[in-house]
Image (cartoon, rainbow, N blue to C red; front, side, top):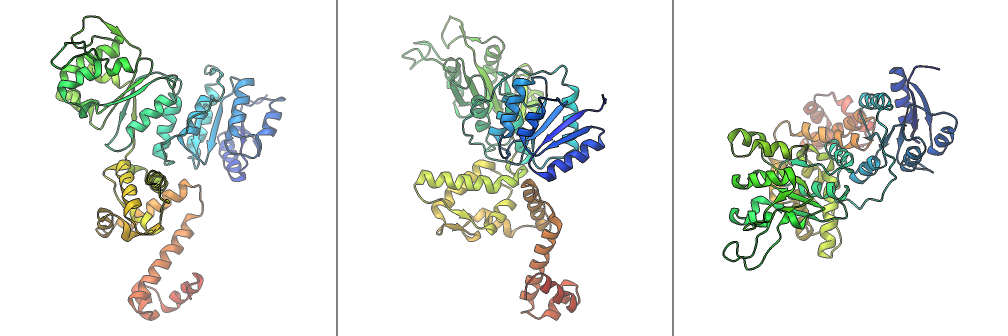
Length: 465
């Protein structure tokens, strides 16, 4: 029997099978490929590999069904799932189904090989609990950019946990949506989810809001009132902008995190609750600890699982998907037909820095739904700040646009990008030069640094006659 690790690759895409087979063979692994899950399941009756790498969407039996069967019949066999249709629900379903890892296509081949090797080496001591797939609710988190895939993976890994999570990221990145997803894909999904922005509540009212109060505890306290912790008993409490919590409340909050007990304002009876806390902040809490404005022990209590939510400028390949989603949602809310973005308008939106992140993009889409005159949104329809930004772009602006174009097409699994980019680039340069010279090819060629014959040949090759 060979000592080589024995890997099965299941994918109806011949190119993916070929790439993984070559990479794994170079890594000194034995590989067997299948173009469908049914053949792989039948072969499992005769032999068992060290690991399986499977696509999700395939004709016949899909990857989730394969995963479920493997987990039931071969609980120690690690399965790595792949998909070109990456979203939160698939990531969560993969981890809930017992997948060892989740790869979004296109993936880094070296990273895939490293994950497969780790799965094989951990097989003996990392048997997972046999958990069947459970239906997951529709997600409002939209995105397929690599930065969001890391967030999806984290939510999937935490889907069977009640552990405390600290979300960090700029304002408007969608931290509350991530918190909702963490709750919805957790053992507490059927219980209460309560969100509270600590920065939006006056300091003198925040203590009562969190812990409740007894009748007569202060002027205006005519009745007993439960606080957010009691209301969230058994469920999840999301505390946004935790960095703004007053120092005098941090001590009380720390005790609740430590032992689940607190007193209502004006109360003498200890109340015990079972609450999962998810906190969020756009501030640097470590710096606030150094400054003495945030308790270090509270920071460590909250920072059990840190999860960074990326700003929109780090996931620009998602801008088109998000914009279409928000335009559709706004049209539904306003009871009108949804509008569509012209490619030029999308290009300007993709080049914009979005300081307000996803929240700003959503607001812009609602504005466009109301203000754009036609069903197709053009550059002239965009808000002034977006148009001005496109006009103020510096000398390197076209390079940034090209990078985003490449990222977007690579994220969609496309290949052979350089010829496509060169054709588009040359066409734009030729059209601009000819426009500048009123169609005089000799002058246009001189502007482009070509000879006239070269320009004529390019025009013919590009079908621009």
